[in-house]
Each structure stands twice: as C-alpha cells, then as structure tokens.
Amino acid sequence: MITSIVFISLFLLILAYFELAKAFSIIDKPNERSSHKGLVIRGGGIVFVFAVLISSFFFITIPWWFYLGFGAIAVLSFVDDITNLSPKIRLTIQFLAVLALLYQVDFVGLPLWLLPFLVILCLATLNAYNFMDGINGMNGMYSLSVLISLGWMNYQNNFHDMDMIRFLFLAVLVFGFFNFRTKAKCFSGDVGSVSMAFVLLYLIFVLINKTGNWTFLLFLLLYGLDTFWTIIERLLEGESITQAHRKHLYQLLCNQRKKSHVSVSVMYFIIQTLISFWVIENYFEGFANPWWFSVMLLVLGSLVYLSFKYILKRQIKIENHV
Image (cartoon, rainbow, N blue to C red):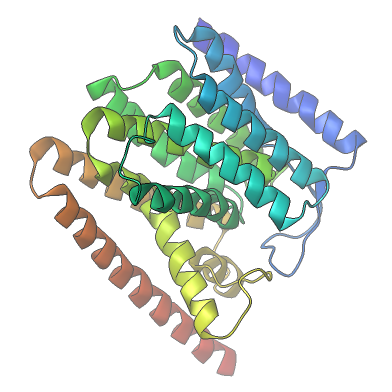
C-alpha cells in the first residue's frame, strides 16, 4: 500500500515539476557536447530528491548530517540547472557536503592520510556521474543497477533502512518513464545526477562501514573507468578537460556509430550489474582477498575498456575515410 502511494506521489510530483519547468523555461538546449536534438525539460531528476525526502518520514533515526549535505547538493545543483554557477561555488559547496557525508558515515576516524583521498574520490564521483549523464536512459539505468545491488546487499546484511533504497528505485522507474525512450521528455539535470551520486555514495559508505569491505565501491566501476580514461585521453591530446566534448565511450557509440541511446544505456546497465554481482559473490564466497580482487577488476576492466574503445575508434576512422 505504501509503495503504491509513494509511486503515485512521485509520478504526480514530476508532472507538477514539468509544468513549473515549462513556465520558467528550465529547458536543455543542445550544444557541441550533447547527444540529443531539440529542446527537452531539464531537472526531471528532482524526483530522486523527492524520494529521499519522503523516505525520511519512515526513519527511526534520521541521518541529519547526510541530509544537510544532501540538501546543499540538491539546492546547488538545481540552481546550477537554472543558471550556470561558477566552478568555485560548485566545488566549495560540494566539498562541504562531502565533509558532512564522511562525518555521517563515521569516516572521520579513519587515518588522516586516507581522508583527502576519500574527499577527492567523492568529488570525482559526483562530477563523473554528471558527465556520464548524456544520453536517454543512461542515468536511470545505471542508477537502477547500483540500487539493485545495494538492495540485494541490504536484504542480506540489513545495513540501512530499506525505504530509501525502495523509494529511490520507484523514483528511477518514474523518471525512466519520461526519459528511457527514443525522444525523451526530460533529462535528469545536475539536480538528478549529482544528487543521485551523493545518495549512492552514502549508501555504499554505510555498507562499507557495516562489512569492512571496500570492494563495494566497484558498484560504480564502469562510470569510473569511462570518466577516468576519457580524461586521460583528453589530457594526452592537449585538450582542456573543462570544455565540452564527445569522447566518452557512450558518446562514440551513439554519435559516431549511431547506436540508439536506449540500447547503449541497457549495455551499461548489464555490464555494471554483472560486475556488481561478481563483487557481491566474491564478498560472500571469499574467492579472493578484497584488495587483490579490486586491483584485478580495475586492471581487467581497464584493459577491456581501452581495447574496446581502441577498436571502436579505428572502425570509425576507417568508415570516415571510405
């Protein structure tokens, strides 16, 4: 009963937001980085924020520091969707929100040398999640993969109240109804992608705290590999990483090879889900030392990613010369 009420509520809330977005022209206009054509409503991912807020009514103990950071991130990202903020303001607010997140999950007690690494990791994840949200269905399908993995782990380990995961799952389904299609009605915007990344980091960190196993960060491996190696590629080519581009793997597949947005998003979903359940199986069966397993998966994933991208770029180059 509660699930149905929340689902309907989220559906009505996103419809109300669409009317608001039309009234105030919160519209995404294509640019040289875009993989879409035409005007699309921006900020549909605000439904993820609604889901997190609704879940708070069911908590016995509310994680106030998480909500403080999450609220700052959500407001910042929504404002950025309406009017582009300066990178300094975005980075400052994100930094403070990340500190609140790390305090909430009790990571401030970790060795001092590890804290700067975690802050950088969190900031990189927030922005990588935003960079990767460039085609129809990508943000929703990838988030669905991570939520399924977290939901399964929560069923096994009960590391967090299930309502947040369940309501986020419903929000992704609602968002997907309008985004997971050939001609999307809305995009998630910064408010959707950055907020989702923040709450997923929170849930993963709580899981790590409960299990003591850092391999669960690999629930975000595919986004990480695509973002990291694309940045390296652009730096090696002397490009500014702040400028718009179309060099992510998913962009090459959609723009150069003309693959449908939906099929590429499904491909990312399948690959990340397989990786995540390999991580889960290794945790429960203890096949390999967690650190060696992580290194192996990072190296193997990088080799597969770079090889596939190299072959793809050669095929595109050959086709352009034919």
